[in-house]
Image (cartoon, rainbow, N blue to C red; front, side, top):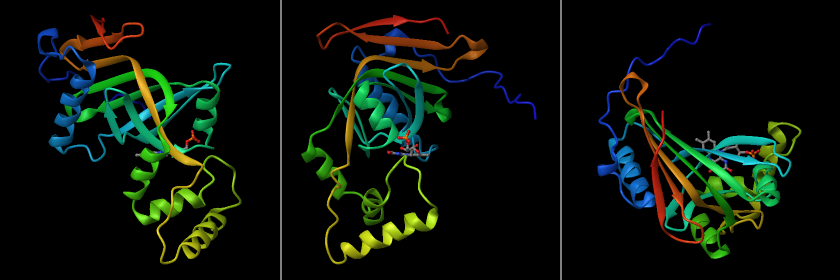
Length: 214
Ligand SMILES: Cc1cc2nc3c(=O)[nH]c(=O)nc-3n(C[C@H](O)[C@H](O)[C@H](O)COP(=O)(O)O)c2cc1C
């Protein structure tokens, strides 16, 4: 099979400095709300999360963005998973969103920390019961004997919590990526795409902005 489904051109309006927010988090908000409202992507909050072992071996997977503000971008996961072990040893990460319907990507890189236990517990309460039980049942990233073993664990916790609220497991919670750089990419014609990169000035909440060649 040849992979030749190349797009001739991207036909979105350009992304110019004059239109870009001085604050990249506000710029993210503008783009995120546009893709969300557009409704053409079922999970525009799905993002690639790249992590790295201490000695530099990278890995990446998809997670869901569950909140963002000036402090960073939050996702939830198992604190004993492969990604969590990498983050333990090397607390930096990169995120990539691809919003095909708008020909846009956003790339974020930064430092990673755990969110507070209160924040994790408040979010866990909003999850569907099945997902809550799944968080207890699945030893994420470990080798398991088979699907039946997983189902058995699920049934056990389901029984354990009959008629009770399911608490957040201690091995489950949120991480926040506090960005040091954000890049906004807007596809354009003839591959002359727009790329604006924001870099946080050391120890401050102010940003420099540069245009990068596509
Ligand atoms: C659309 C989508 C959303 C996902 N969201 C999450 C998530 O929010 N948290 C999570 O731990 N895994 C999520 N996953 C599963 C991860 O991609 C991955 O399989 C899992 O976290 C194990 O990764 P690890 O072994 O590298 O730690 C999602 C997968 C998909 C396809």
